[in-house]
Length: 377
Image 1 (cartoon, helix red, strand yellow):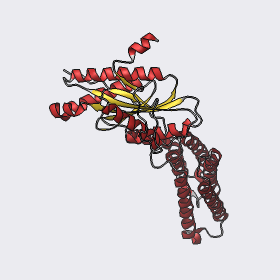
Image 2 (spheres, helix red, strand yellow; image 1 turned 60 degrees about the vertical axis):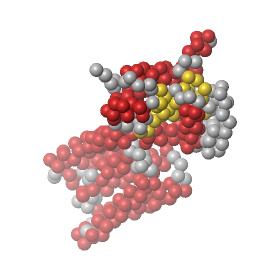
Image 3 (cartoon, one colour; image 1 turned 30 degrees about the horizontal axis):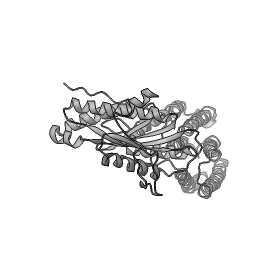
Image 4 (cartoon, one colour; image 1 turned 90 degrees about the vertical axis):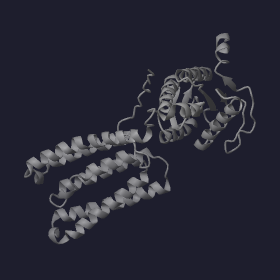
């Protein structure tokens, strides 16, 4: 009976950002919506609270937060690149102004007692892990202080206790749920490797880091040779089992160097950062080719892989699309030259769009020709 080993489990950091929501502009527009909601609320209840000091204070805080919201959003459009001081400032001001609204306006601000949590969630979904933890800690601390020390909330002791508990535990609970969603969005359900979404994010990050890196990076693309025959002869169940085996061995052999992903079908990829020794990486690829052949024997059908390996020097500034295209070109070169081998970018030149311009043979390796050279060295 064939047994399928589980691929190495992916690890997602707590408070992971959900793809598509990680935008500072999105948080800026959400801040404007909040000020609009507060404005409509104050106008709607003008007759009830008119003339009270709490209403005047709430109106003043609305003006301050509106000016701040417009200023931060304008700054984001004028300077869209990442700015840590601006994001830290926005988190602090948001939480402090809402806490002031709750503490100084009593009944006027009471309906917005959960507003700090919504700002915390927005920060966590649109910024990064560190900002989510910072906003959650600040929000919980300020909200608890308001609830415990405000004279208004003393008359609602049971409700106050529940809100204190919610302000502490609800952010943690919600962010753990987003962890699961974020991981599912980035994970291939069959192999548990990263999927195309996760790969694109990893590639973009590697591209951004390369300019200031001290070690080179690499992009590896591979396509299985002989997989269609397995599917035709053994059905989709057999094909899925093969993909699980291949995913396991790809993650096992290449995990010391980078992060593996499955695009779909029989296509896989690896993003490598901080590569210290090309020879070790290529030895691992040779070992993977051997493992792939063993999987084919297990399923009584020849199986191999055509692999393209594109290296990038530290300090270079390639686009992510260029990094992908070069590896893709090298992978198809491996297929043209007989399959079941890997081809590197050594000695190759590429056009501006990543097309292979000058193919050479010195960078081509099969599963049998690397180990002797290592032994000789």
